[in-house]
Length: 101
Ligand code: FES
Image: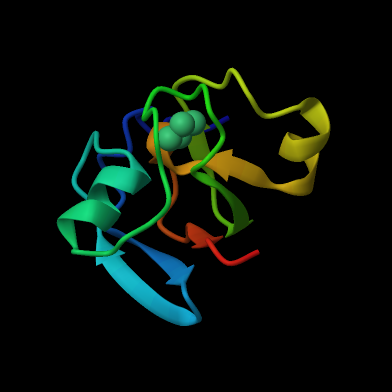
C-alpha cells in the first residue's frame, strides 16, 4: 500500500507530447497538468477547466494521476487510459501524456 501523499508533493516533472513535440515540464505541487502546460507557454486544447466538456482529454501513456473531477469520460475512456488535463494531478514521477492521440 502506498504512503504517498495524494497531492503529488513528491512529483517533480512530467512528460507531454503536443503537436508532435515532447516536453518535460516542471510540476508545481498541487497543480493540475493543464496549468503546468499553460505556465510553460504551451497551448493545449481546453474550455471549461472544470471536468465537464472533455476538450482537454488526452491519452496517459505512463504514470499515475488523480483526477479531481470527471463528468465526461466514460468507464471505457478511463480503461483506455484517457484523462482530463484540467483535473489531473500527478501521483508518480513517471507521468507521460500524449495530447495528439
Ligand atoms: S477543459 Fe473541459 S473537461 Fe477539461
